[in-house]
Image (cartoon, rainbow, N blue to C red; front, side, top):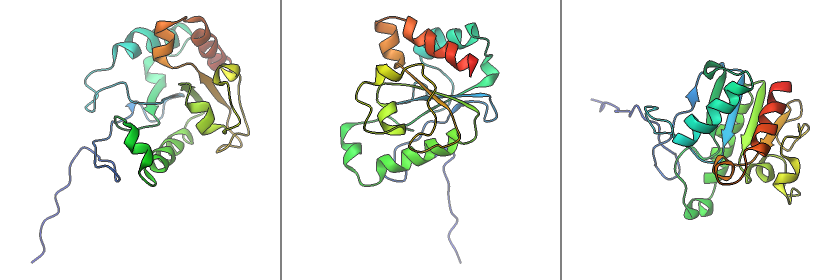
Length: 172
């Protein structure tokens, strides 16, 4: 007699067994926002104040409704330095993010770390490409990507650079 297989409703990372955060928003939304790390709770019950007080208002200001926005992150769970050392751990998260990117027309990345990952190591100053539509990138040939500052950086410095990226997104 075979044993029953029990499955958890919350997905876990195949490498570190940490719970994964679900993407926020609709899967068929127009815009995919990619962050470096998650800013919301695993059960989608509560968004971080940075998203509710900065990201959504600025995207709405540019003409995007909440139903047109999906938010994901490169890392699908909380991150620690030792995760970078585990073989294939980072690559798994990267591939999961690429799958999500492929199903959206407009993609914007917020985070200084993301241009190097998605464009290439030759990017030495991430800020130099903020707001510039980038195509023919490391992983995408027929998709235009936009990059901007991290949400934390925008809160502590100036919102101008962030708004410029959001305006470019609207025009894309």
